[in-house]
Image (cartoon, rainbow, N blue to C red; front, side, top):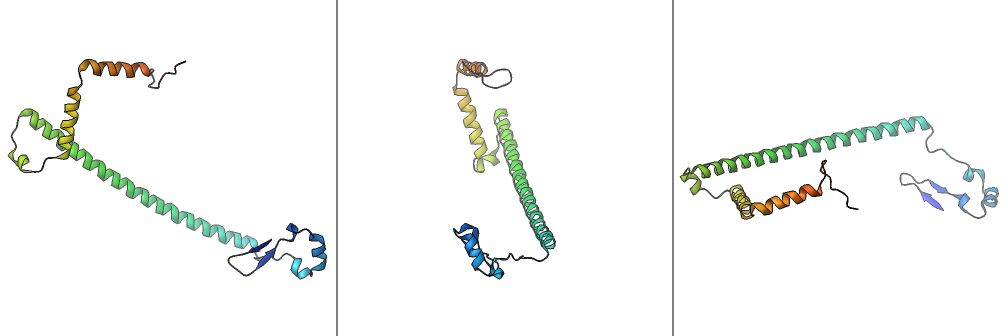
Length: 153
């Protein structure tokens, strides 16, 4: 079995994987069978590698934290826009209920949120009250006090 290191031209021959390991060991010169250290000062090498790994880990953490901050900021802005749209739709609905005539809004394009809200309100009005109460009772029966579904045996 032959292993080649990517960073240098040193080859390692795993003789214990071969059938005639002891015979090979006797035949080959000691310079080929003796182990050679890749790094003379192993503790120093390990400290350098741990410092390098630590710095890489810190850089990755900073990068992830920055990405997390950007995502949170984007979600916050999106929530603010949704809240503003909801407030606008609520105000338009209030005006419509009061019967106010806004000629300015007639000139503008219809608001998507107002259309969605109207569709929801109309769909809620289509369901008879008795059916809605039956659905609520069925959902209450299916769940226990803590809100989890009961097991049926």
